Image 1 (cartoon, helix red, strand yellow):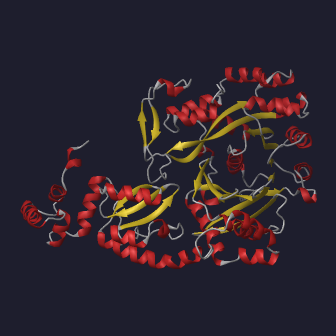
Image 2 (cartoon, one colour):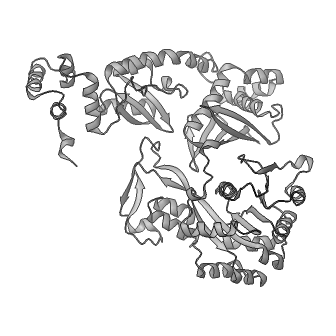
Image 3 (cartoon, one colour):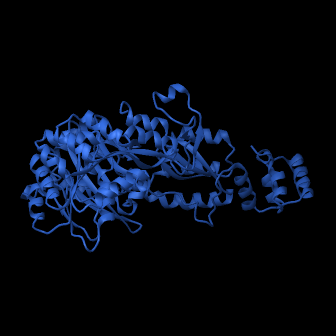
Length: 573
C-alpha cells in the first residue's frame, strides 16, 4: 500500500496545502496543553474549515464523504431507521442512519475510525455497518430534521400494535381473525398504518432491485423475504397480528376476493415510483397458518431487450440470429422457471420486429408491452387458450408468431404446422438442456417426420449472478474449490461485498446457454428417433457449447464466481 495511507491527519492537511507546518506545530502545542482531538483544535483555531478537514480524512481512509449541501445526508424515510437507531443515541454519538439493505446499514459518522462505536451500532441494529464520513455539525442538523419528520410515521406504525406494545398471543389472534366480518376486514385493511406498511414493503423491494416479495405466515410469526438476483433474503418482518390486514390490503389493490381464503387467487396492479411504472403480479395460496402472498415486480425501465446484453457469446448470437432471420421454422427456448426464457424471447422480438412484418403473440401473462407487436393474453375461463388463439392467428396473416409455452400436444401440433406452412414460430419448453427438447416433443406425441423439417434452433439457458464489478478481485482458488471444474486459467474471481452491491458480492444477472442448430445431422437423428444422449453427442461434435462449458467461460472472464458456476452446472458436463 502507498505510504501516505499511514500519514497522520495533521501531515495530510499540510500535504493538501490546507495548513502550513507552523500552524500544525501551534495546534499540536495547544493539544499538548489542553488535550482533545487535533482536528477539532484546528477548526476551533480557524486554521481549517470543518468540511475541508473531514473531506481530506475521508479521502485518505477511502470512506465516502457526505454533506448536507450535496443532499446526500438524507436518510430513507420508509425503512424504519428512526426505530433502528433511537434519536437520543444518534444525537449523543453523532451518527445518522442513511439506508438499510438486507442486513447492511449505511451510517454517517464524524469519526469512522471509532471501532467501539461501530461495534455498539452493530449490536444495537443487528446489521453490518457501512460508515460514511460527515461533519459533526451537518450530522447534528440532519438528525434533528430526520427524527422530527419521522415521528409521525413511527406513531402511525406503532398504532397498529397493541397499546402495551406486546403482540396478542397467537391463539387469541386466530380466534379474532375468524370472527372478523367482511366490513371489518376491509376497514382494517384500509387503516393508515397498514396502507403505509404495504407501501414501505413494496418501495423497499423496488429500491433493492428485488424481483419477488414473499409474505408467508407461520405459527408465531410472519416471514418477509425478497428475491434479489435470483436469491431469497430475509427482511425484518411486520408483527404477526398484522398478517390478515396486510393480505387484505394487497388483495384490495389487486382486485381479488378478500372473503375467499380457501382457494388460490391471481391478480395484478401497477404502481409508479419516480415516474417509473412498476407492474406487480400477485399470487395467493392458502396454507395451514393463513394465506401466503407472492408479488412479482416487473420494472419495465430495467428490462434489457437487447440480445447483445443478455450474456450470449459471439458464436451463440450468430446461431440465434441465423435462425430468426429464416422466413419460417421453429425456435425453442428451454429451461426451468425463472431461467430468463421470456426475456430472451422479447429480445428476439425486438430484433425481428419491423413495419414489414406482422408479429402476433399469445402469452400467459403478457409481461412487457412491445410497440409494433400484437400481444394476446390467455384467458382460459372464457375459452381463450394457446391452441384456440393459434388457430385464429393463422387467419391473421402473420409472419412471426410467439407462443408463451408449449404445454400440450394440440399447441405443439399447431406450432409445428405453422412452421411448416411458412411462419417463424418462437416458443418455450421446460427441459434441462437443448437435446432433451427433441425427446420431450416426441414424448407428448409429435411425429418425428413433422418435427425434423420444422425445427431450426433450440436454446437452453440458465441465469447466473454476476460478480459486483466494483468489489470483485482476482485470486488463486485451492484445488478442492474447483470440484471438477476445468479452468484454463489459474485465477478466478470473487467479491468482497460493498455498498453498491449491498454487501452481497453480486449485482445483476447474466445467462449461460447451449445453442443447438438443427442441421441435417440432427434432423436425421430426429427422423431415426435417436436418444437425447446421441443427439447431444452429435451436437457437441458440431461445436455446440454446453451449459457447463458456458459457465466455465463466464468464470474465466471474471463474470461469475466458481461457486456460482458449480451451483448451476453440477453434474452437467
